[in-house]
View (tube, helix red, strand yellow):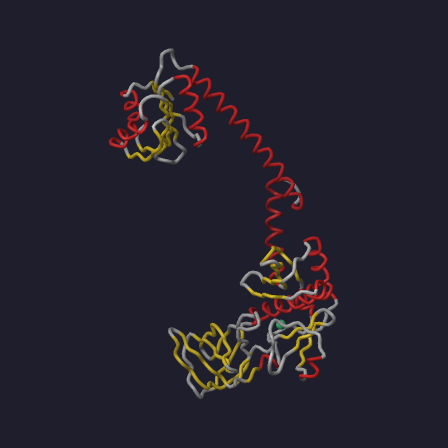
Length: 390
Ligand SMILES: [Zn+2]
């Protein structure tokens, strides 16, 4: 059994320990020490990182009471090495883990539910509850959790006897045997936990719920605490500030300004479509008397425009209508070919024999893409009895 120093002091980052064993495992090494401050992954809290001797500690696990340090270099068995924890990482985990305790304690107490899932990701922490939390109550829960921070609520650890434990009201995710470690956060939470926690809730800084969703019949909350909450605020405040600058409004009015901008954009699109379609109708009306087949080149049309324009032309020309359009920077023309008498697919076959052409459809309508010079395409269609324009 490794002596677990992190339970004596969650704030110590430097220590000396004896290497008891070092085994190669794949491209890494598994190092066992007589004592360690490195917390192994467990109870929802990820493992510590840091250095041991000259080796980097990449991961830490516990197996049957023995702590296994995954390192990038071997360490000599029997030697004494210097251990050093990545404190920034550990403190971030302590802030987020401790914040989770307070929030879970408040929520489980309020709704008489259980915390059924807890995951500390790189960016955020997710907590799952087996109850539907009313969305309108989330802000109040968040505030209560922050009041616990403002009151600087102490975290205390105790190892109760079986009898003491039986008399205690505490949260636990599973049936526990052996010595149970109880972590108490004032009036807010009492929970069986093997992780590392802050001494005082003030160290958590802030608890912020950033999203909630229905999850497996209950609720999943996404939460950030401590420095993560500050970074989240900074990121979102910067984004709002930037949006406000672009729209010449204060940051907090950026959302409303975007809504107005989108409405304006939609009405411009409508007006633009109206103009395009008036243009199509006029172009079709200008076809000389007796035109039966018409092909038109017009740049910048979308697929809806192509079909609409080809329809308009066909109504006027009577037999066949084709529209070609190229978007800026593209080599190929998108096209729509409509026919009332001959099979439109036969003409497409002939195009395919001459040009790089892809497309398909039905006897009366084909759409596709063709890469060719405009003059070549125009000559081809004129050869087929089309009047070409544009
Ligand atoms: Zn805990």
